[in-house]
Image (cartoon, rainbow, N blue to C red; front, side):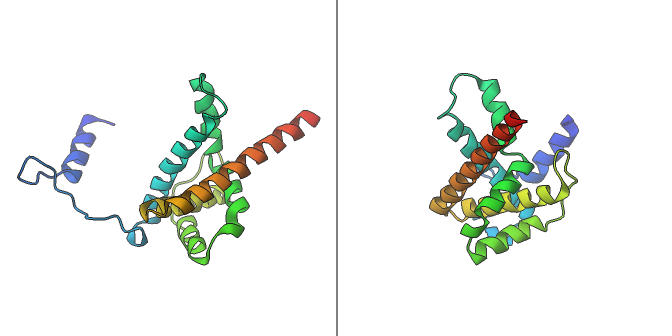
Length: 164
C-alpha cells in the first residue's frame, strides 16, 4: 500500500474527538445491519485464530508447519466441506445468515471453485455474526464441529492417497 493511499484511509477512518481521542462512528456493531462481506471478514479472522489455537495441541515448535497447515484448513475448499458437515446443526436463523453471506457479491476465487468460495463466505459470515452477537458458546460449538469435519476429511483424503 502506498503512503498516499494509507493517508487517505487514515483521514477517512480516524477523526479527532477534540479531547485527545478518536471519535467513534458507531456505538455497537449490529450484525443484522452489516454487509455480509464485513461479517465474513470478522468470521475469517475468528476461524483463523481458532484453528491456530487448536493446532497447538498437535505441534508447538515448527511455526512454518503450523502456518502452512492452518492456511490449508481455513481455505475456501475446506471451509465449504466444513459447512456441509455442520449444516444439519444449524437453526433456521443461522441458515439465513449463511445464505446472506453465500449470496453476497464478491471477487473471483483463486484456489477454489466459485461454489466453494461462496459457501466459505457464507460460513465465515455465520461465524462473524455469532462473534459480533457475542454468542460465544454457539460460536465455539460450530467452530469445533467444523474443525472436526475438516480434520477427519483431511485424514480420509491422505488415507485414500496412500492407497493409490
